[in-house]
Length: 58
Image (cartoon, rainbow, N blue to C red; front, top):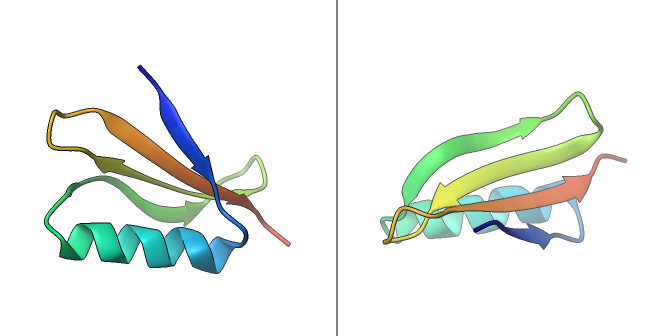
């Protein structure tokens, strides 16, 4: 299964990541600027599924 959320901005990726991390969700990949032109992060849900958050870099 893959689940990904398009965010409005790179800052939104960071905001969602920090909020979920603060709630105790597992960190799979901390936010980073990917070479393909997106801000990207991954969190693990309670079942171990990896969920992606991304936004285009300006």
